[in-house]
Image (cartoon, rainbow, N blue to C red; front, side):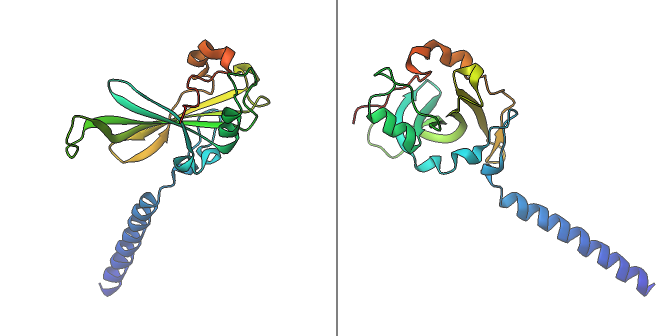
Amino acid sequence: MKRTHILAAAMAATFLTAVGAAVYAQDKFDKYTLVSPDGSRLADFRGYEDWATISSARTDQELKVIVGNPAIITAFKAGAPANGQPVPEGSRIVKMQWKLKKSTEAPFVVDVPDTPTQAFVMVKDSKRYPATGGWGYAVFNHDAATGRMIADEAKADCGQSCHVAVKGKDYIFHPYQQR
């Protein structure tokens, strides 16, 4: 009988340890481990939260802030792509998106970011993405229920269908905004 209690206690302890480890692992989720279906890794955009702003946009539902890595910011400041020069290989862009809400603190009517919805990424890599003008595209969605990001099932050329409209500007919609 005593042996049965010890075995039951050991099994319960093992179960609780496994559950605790799983909960701990979920709490330590790293969005930079995400990979899109075509192999685009969010890790290749590590630190994008602190990159310089290229531009912003707003729809009726979302605020969009477009940021770029130092390579593309330098190219923009030199006049690309408006000067006819393509942006350099290794350039990276992230369009971060948030749902909007009315500010409850401002003394005037203003919409402010609420919950994040998506990070749309682009990388200039002509060897890897020759069929899409040298650009690879991926989407990482924010799951409101868990507060975590997940890789979208869209393929690398998903952004190409929209961006082909600005092929003459090296597939870039938003110019570097004047400061």
